[in-house]
Length: 85
Image 1 (cartoon, rainbow, N blue to C red):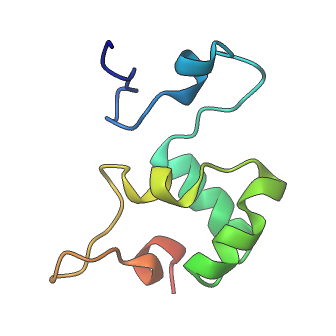
Image 2: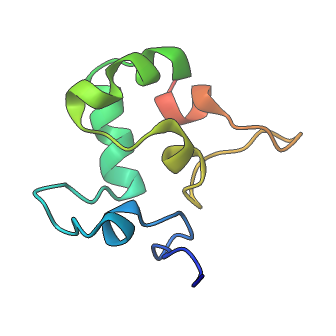
C-alpha cells in the first residue's frame, strides 16, 4: 500500500486521501488561525475542542502539529501562549 498523502506541514492530507480536495474548506495558516481563535476569546484547548467544528477550524491534532505552535520548555504544547493568555 502506498504511503498516506501528507500536507506541506507533515500532517495527514485527508482531503487527498478521500478525494475531496478543495471542497470549500479554508486552508489556515498558523497566524490566521491564532488571530481568529483569539478574536473568539477561546480560553483553553477544551474550549477550542468544543468550538472548532462550529467555526470550521482545524482539529486539535492538526493545530498541535503546526510547526509554529508554541511549546513549553519541557516540550509540551503551550496553549496559553497560543491563546494569548
